[in-house]
Length: 395
Image (tube, rainbow, N blue to C red; front, side):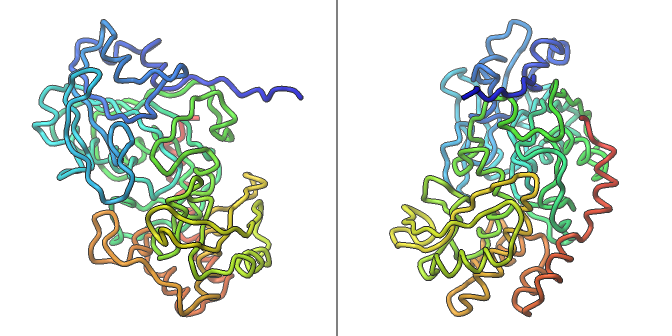
């Protein structure tokens, strides 16, 4: 059997070190990073910067889950510390503050951002970036983004655009659930469309194409957060992240989070057959039983499904995820429950609404809206977003 050849690309991290080191010379440098901030040889950016004779690395910043990615849950704040390898101060941007303060930036002239995104609106790393950009604009610091692939490709755009008034730390701006942008492209869009106005520099990748999924390239995969172990997880995440707003398990506490969904009251055969009858593209729902070791339904046997994506190009995660929610809601009206607040620092709103970026989807479920009405709503704002997005494409 022939070995699968993966397309060689060059990451923004490698580009700045090999070709654009001038952007960092003669400056005090801060770095926003975590355990996935590595090059093709799995060397960490903090070590590469710290050891580089032309870079004066002074400060490290970590996102949700910590700089080493060891903090498991949502809503568990990480603390400031000292990095054990470099001896540099580490400031958590998921702590009492979610944006760098003037004191945190005191010893930096340039703040470099290098985190792996997953291509979904509901992922806090992109808002850590936006917050850091605002701080840099406020305190006169340059902001550099080292670009990385969108792991689920840069073509498909899906899901309703977040409504104004529904902003949160998992949705600061009116973008769709699946935005189809790299982190660098998002930075350009945030900076100009939403008037952040920082001194922004984007370091592009070499040879990445919009139709590349992450594992079609030779880029090194390190899980960017504890429940994002594989590229397959990222592929289904825009579908099953909606279950975080319910009392149905999204598979945390199993070895395949977000690919496994279920609850103690769900009949796996009944649920899988109901989903199969919808004939959703590019996915098969395999009935399973599982036992979460922590989080929802911990220690209780659950029935549910495993999502097997058979065709990534025709798979529509947003529609699929909402179909899964609606099916569970309709099959088990007495048992199905929405999650109670808080969710990601939001204490006064339904967590499902926070994720969906609107109250309308939940209300459509509760009012027994038709499947066609729901699918139509999921296209709200997408055409307008595509026109805006076009201005910021780098590839």
